[in-house]
Length: 326
Image (cartoon, rainbow, N blue to C red):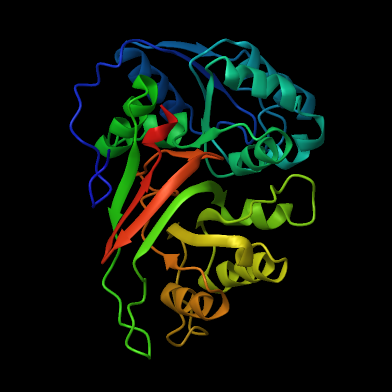
């Protein structure tokens, strides 16, 4: 369980050694030192880390051509590993979606393999959910997280350890103080939801899947979103796409994670990320929560994409709970 600031309970990281399969389904690994640090740290924790034969392959911006990356994904599914962990995100998964053997991946998940990743990996997670209903995990990558030069974030590591040990039950966090609405009601009302499908991930990837067979048709779900390098107006534009496609109106809640790596411009004149949040709340009836500790940031929780979860909000404290999965 994670406390209201997004922190996990203390651990001794004694989940026992696990078999972790590392592969590169998207962009090429450019930061080789970070990749090596990540592998070394996972091994130092006692895990058996198996590196895919083409993990460091390169074809222009990609980690090998499409056939190479597709084969790597299928090897991860056939590995029998406890965790299939991406080296990095970037771009490339969209090309592979029509050719993935989703049944083989779902069979691997039934056998105990947990597919973990974020960013570009959202395309795979969404397609997997649309095609099979199988649960994957939004979480870290090898290079940017386990290979971070400043060290591994404690919260992320505790959450990953929870996943390995099967003890993870939920993630709680604290939302920022916000002004009440014009009618005096809280910006975020009290929320109590049960048995809602948690889904989402990278906003740009989800928007790119609208109108394709790879965007799951989730009704009464909880949609979580994050992105990097996207200015607030572009975030609003992508949210508009989900809004006009009817996706947002079908959700019971929208949970915004971390949106990082953008700069204010003279054009903005006071328009900022909070402006987008305020606008979104006028467009949908579902509550819009903010500050979920997930995205292209060091401190990130792990979230079960496609699982049935509960969501509660009391004041500024929010909790997504999936302990019943066990």
